[in-house]
Length: 398
Image (cartoon, rainbow, N blue to C red; front, side, top):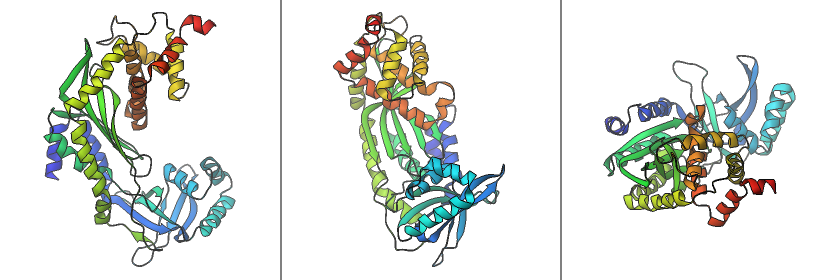
């Protein structure tokens, strides 16, 4: 533990983003309980909580030393549970509140048809301070390989402390379903254009409950705004390959979880050393130099261009207004002031969406913007030409 704390102090920035993120992760470590169980040992029910809204609950009948327990499902786990039973989650949420006396027996009837099938329940036990706050947080395949956030951080942080570049954490976001931490190398920087200083970054991400794979991505950080863009260098390891058990309720030990994660964490370590090399960073910077030289026509309609980009990225139409706001903001920052609109401007605008309003703290939004920036960077010349030419007033009027 002392080594971990020293690593956090070494890597944390003035906002202590990493330390705060690790504290959030550590708070829940001792409460984790994971069970392989057949559906036949599960009973579904509902209880009224607080404002009388009904909360879904799973009761698992224990055996062979595993006690019977009941815990409510959070919304994400309820969606997974409904999917396992072949029930649309929107329908399930509605019926639970409107006709629970019909819906609950129906769900239990479906469970009986799957009594020999297994699942992995990821749960939190009750805390000492707050009785009744136990929780089912994930309903997963028995083949799901557990890689926990705490183990990932313990594996990555010592290596970052040893790597060249003087690394620091710039952001750490946690949610019920995802962990995302960004690091940058203060001494590995370059200018793809005068005034546009970029730094090498590394992002680690994970979901303990099936909302994403174990991820290691190389990032390019624009220092003027700390927008991050994923490069083409990335590692994604799915959570498949976990151990299956007998047809009985079985709690997974900490040793079992660590063994399941060992191979994945080793591969993450190997790729981290490669992604942190200056030579690999320089290859991505050269792409950004070309993006700065990829000038758009001076009469391009920005609003239409944003509509086209959002459509290409398959994002929500509402993001078009956000992209326009971010694009205008980009043109007022170092490296873009008094410069013609270019592919690089659009890339920075796309990644900058993640920093507008309260979106900064959402790990899913952050990753979506980073991936989108990389897609624009690597768009073929033909596709880029089509995207931009259709935003010229003459083309719009045609």
